[in-house]
Image: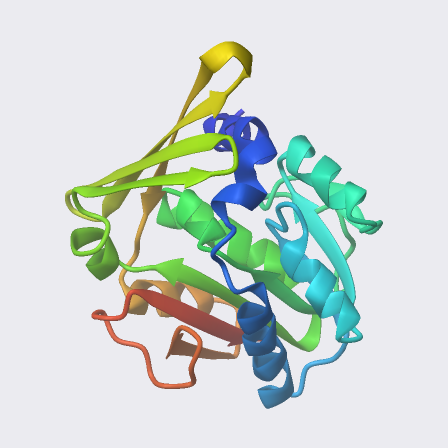
Length: 246
């Protein structure tokens, strides 16, 4: 299965995911998604591609959205279900298990689509999002940029201690447009013993214009914003938010 390594990564790291993402301001991200939907006159039925453990979906649900979370990781969805999220689907981005024109909005957040390491494969995701959207529907997602890989993520090292975990983050830029993230976790057990976990995942960045042109194959209007704003994006942004209208 293609992308089985991505699936394995998220299945294995699921038990630690909420701790790793503890610093993320989910309310801010949800507010921004809500603002995008309002700006482009979207409606209430959302499909979230790569919903993870469901933290963002909970907030959007509380804002009145009818949201379905999709993720290829069964273990992530199991944790989301424990948070009383019921509309969850274990499936791939590349073959979304819904009929045509079922959703008002399709979202993907937290650079989930950077895990797709080929532009032709990414176009398949775009086509699937287009297919399940109603006419006038919104597809919005964020991507890390080549710039952030070259600067903040290159030779990056961070060590943190959370609860009974020691977490080491390392990343390196791989020319011309990829970044390898390695996470090592030492889990403290009894009697001063530790259990070690090693995880790694490869992300690929794409030029903004390449994403826009790929979206325009099907979508009628496409916009690129600096993340968490409505300023026009450029290649020196760390993260870019794309909005495509069917």
